Image (cartoon, rainbow, N blue to C red; front, side):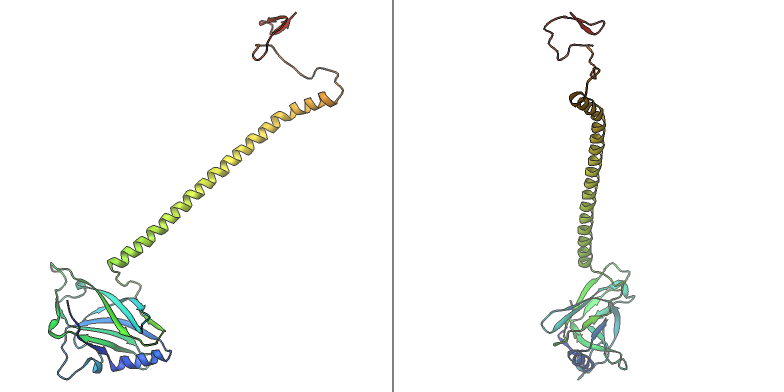
Length: 249
């Protein structure tokens, strides 16, 4: 693993930082890996670009930490490089708020002989690195990053997005189940209304007849009863004629 013991904000980065503290926007644009050495007497502060760039990484993360720093990150895989290289340089670029200046190297790190070898694509070794750069922003609050729509997501990002999607799906399934229950209850209620309506219609004529018998002038027998059987009847006198379905004295 590369150890970036020689790192600093560049002179151009300090100007961007000062403008950010004054209220202008700090917008990070990309991360660049390289294999170059610093020349004798050269410092990160004086650099305007990565010495020997080998890979450019899209930014996938920009988090203001609340302690005067920001974490800017991305993901590097060695399928981005046809040739192997020593991962010796790490540079973070940003747009200067002054459009006439444009993109500048904001901060830079170099690990010298502690560089890590990155094998080329197509080999037996697959390398995936989550690159996080923590750099100073002071009291700047308008801090952003250019994150492409197709930026590579880490496995951790994927698992987080997957968990969110599964939770949303579970909530949707619960909503569907509740909706189906509501439909079933509504259908049962509608069936009950129909049954009640039928019962009312069936009893309307009986109620009308009973009302007339009780409160009206009875000139005929409004009730009809047959003696097809004696279910529910206790015969105390007379004879039941089953053939003619009648009682005889």
